[in-house]
Image 1 (cartoon, helix red, strand yellow):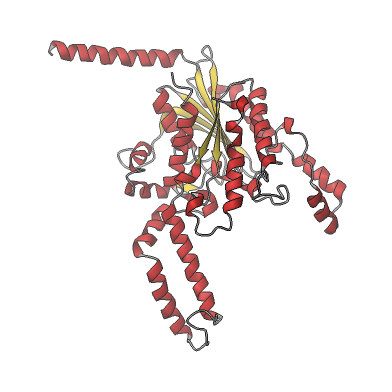
Image 2 (image 1 turned 45 degrees about the vertical axis):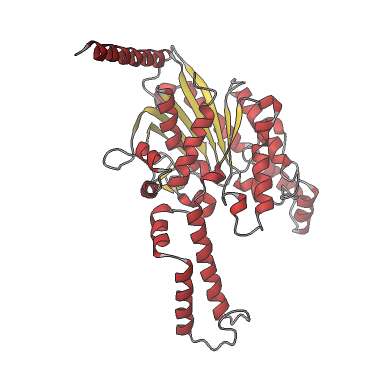
Length: 415
């Protein structure tokens, strides 16, 4: 071995030992992930294959699988995941791998991923030390009621909601009592589980060093659908200020989480809902005002002076799979054309009603082939596993979202 090689080897070994020593002396970094169905995650493992076809996602795919193409097990990332329905809530925990997305049995690995998989992969890769993820997520939950933080106060029905309840003959006292019981329930469940894990970290991560302790290194919030569609709670949605109540509630949420966990400067990342993709690429303008206003309301706390430098917004619309959306739009056009032909629509081919059923089928098949290629259909089979409201259940999308969440959380964590 020549002198230069020896120097290089010595330097490399020194750097490695420095990193190991640093990792051993650092408190365990803990990241909390919370939200509704898209934080649960509905991207099936089977959709990983589509990532290989895109030069943007192929490098991410290589981080997610081993040499045989199977999902990796992250030996330095541990996770506790609390989820489930009303009567079937439970916890799954262990080393991070694929299967910590939405699952039928909370304690058992499923067939889906959420943002947690690539979040853990890229956070651990950047930090080069063990990390712990605590994830709590439930589908169909709002911040106006379910996750409502204590300092936001009780849910207050607006006059429009009260009028609708009266018109339907509802007992207002009973409705208000039910709402009060629901309010903040999932905020409480989330906090209870985080505290449970932190009170006995070794249960989840056996190698935890109690002398070094832990550091709450970041909180990621990925939610929104149930608020965006709540026209009763937000009667002026789509108009300027129509979702201000969401912004206010989320700001209270950030303050309360930090206060309750005694982590006043804990990094907080808001995953801004991006279902539908970039607004400028919408095929129809119908939902642009609502989706646009809601996205701005979600991101707004990151611009508040009190949160400067430690609250960040990640716009997830840029990770939307436009190819899948275009295919879905074209499939809808084919269905619409089938209806036009069947009902002899005055502006379409069977306006006089003379086409036979077989002629309609032939016409429709030619129309379909003009809009939809065999390649697009083949792509959808490997890239999509759920509806658009769940980002098509696409690993291409979910993997990029998780990676972006990690990068946003770590931008002020890394030395």
